[in-house]
Image (cartoon, rainbow, N blue to C red; front, side, top):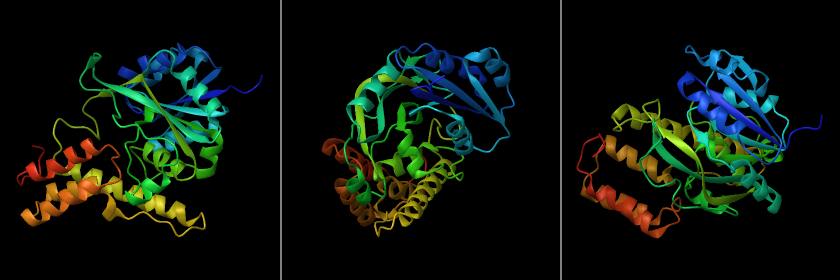
Length: 308
């Protein structure tokens, strides 16, 4: 049989209670021919039983727990589609997602990554905020990223689709990304390929307590995020070094990293004003009003490491 046009790649770790909805949303898509591959990364819950219930409708890969990057790499290696669409096991897609993504790729042969907005929801499908990302970026993002330590209003995993040729060019996701492995997709690919942004909301992004989200960002969470951002900059610079270019990212240009550091160790007034001015110039947020809002928040915080 000819290879499918699209490979749907689902990564799962102990999300058996959510996984069925994710798989159903992929199976119910109309349009291009698609294969569905789910990689279970050593789950200890009922995930195996949930996957088994789908029979031959999905292709399952079971592996010991190695982290999200290893799970996504295993799915990529097993896939055959010309386009790779990623789906986290705790999210789900809306009807028409695959068709819209494929139309975008067909219309833009220079695009290596296509993304859309997601609707944040609580468990139970309660809408809790406006669709994300609010600012849409497309075209050649490399000049902006080089000024912002790779930061742009990037989408979450379940909104990302990449051309296989682009994925092959940037190589496997570094396995140091045990969580938030999408940082490699939205970091490396836009440095080489153009990006296409779809304004539609084509999926739901489930907000719940996990290793990346808390009701409040305590010190441990802030340090975890800072370490992840530093890892991302380091890995992207290592990648750029292989491209025979002198272009590099500078962590000092990463405004969210600097804000997190200030929340852990609050600066004096002069330091806060300096951070505010840096926020006004930050290239990672193209929208001037949102950039100004984020900068103002620095001045409004008063000294504790916890979220206000």
